[in-house]
Structures are given as C-alpha cells and as structure tokens.
Image (cartoon, rainbow, N blue to C red):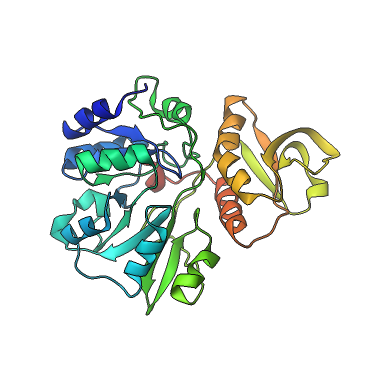
Length: 321
C-alpha cells in the first residue's frame, strides 16, 4: 500500500514498521527508539535473531550518539562515499543501541543512504534500523510491488520507484590494521583504493561463527526455482538467464539480465528477474556465469552463487525469533 512521507512519519513514530526506498534496495524501517518495532522486523522477515541490522542515519555526526571510536580513514571514507551504498561497521557503546539491532555485538553497522525520500524521513524521525524489505532468504525488493508480494498489499510502503543500484550496500569493517569487506555490494572493492591506498580484501563468514553484518552466513537472494550456474555460456540450456548479445542455441527461452558490457544494468535487473522465475512458476533455470570477476561483476557472481545453493535453509536459519 503506497503511503506518503507524512504517513510514514506517523507510523514510525507510533512504533510501526514501514518499507522505504533506498538507492540499493527497499528496506523495512523501524525507529531506533522503538525496540518493539525492531523486534517486529525480525518477526516479519522470519530473520534469525543473531543476524544484525544496519542503522541508517541522515548525517555523519549522528554516529557520535553511539560511538566515539573511529578507525583510521573513517572520515575520508565517509566524505567520499556518503550518502551512498557504503555501510561501515564501528565499535559502539553497547547501551546506546538496542540489543536486537546489533545482535548483542560490540559493533554496529551504519550507513547514510542516497535517496531523497528516505533522507527526508531520517531528518524527521531520526536514525532508522533497516534490513532489506523481503522475507528472509528471498531476493531483495527493488520496487514497491516486490515488498507487497512478500508482505501483502496492505503493507505500508513509501514508493520511490525502481532502486537504481539493485544490489545491497557494500559493508566494510576495520580489522588487523586495515579495512576489509564483510559483504560485497554496490561499491566495487577497487573503488576504495583511491581513499585507502589499497584494495580491501573480502572476508568470508564461516558457519558456526556469529555474523557481524547482514549477508555473511546464510543462503540469500534465492528464488524457489533451482538455479544451475554455467561457466560456458554456449552450454546454457532450457530456461536461461543470460545476456542480450549472446545467442543461446540450446535455450528454450532466454530471460535477459542485460548486456555483458554493463554490469550496472545487470545488477539493477537481477533481483527482479529472480523473482520473475517464481511469479511464472519456473522450477529450474540455467544462469550464464561466463563473465568477468572484477568490479561490480564480483558482487553479481556472489549474489548468484548464494541464490543457487542447492541446500534447504536449516531450521536455525529459517526460524522466526
């Protein structure tokens, strides 16, 4: 259900959850001052309780309410990439952040989104705790209709149109005297070199450890359809998720992700295509994975790999807290 910003303000201030747009994906927002609403986010999504959320703010100085300890190059990163699709994990005063929001960790993730509607809402309401607006494990929502498909036509949504980036923010944290990538996202790893003097490495979360941010441990971004990843595009067959300039001779039908020359276009359309598979009742599809692994392509490959895991979600990952 499309709502105005003023209605969203009223609902958030009264302790309710609202879906709002960002430049990456839609998010389920709750005021950081309303712990019961934060609890409701976990219930709505079916999200594991040990999976922390992201705190969205309007201005960098708002972080001072939660921490006074800033890693090297934090301000340079903030000046370069905020507002934008960068999330930074920082040490916090544990008493300043609701336990559910940070999953009991001594750190929390912060971001300033680059979307005029959500920035206006942040100015009015204050910091918002916000994960992606989708059922846990499913492809993220990049338009209002995706949110309504997961949570119902009457769920309140601020409609900001189609999200431009189409994949989530890049998440980084400071460890062992350098910044590392905890989650690949809309900002490629190579983009940080001009600020840091090095390209941060991707650190993978391991099962059995506590995730320090969203997107580390669990099967994510997955349609009901079984995805088969194909590294040789000429061998793709059946229903194919592929590229516009390639002719798939063995395909029964091709759903086009975009052009191989524009990863930004592919990222923007990715989740909508994964959702389309389920809307059409397609049970199996072949994905053309024959593309580079640098820049934004690395994020696209990671999203598809997680979406294609041929294992069911465990009871621990699928439970409603």
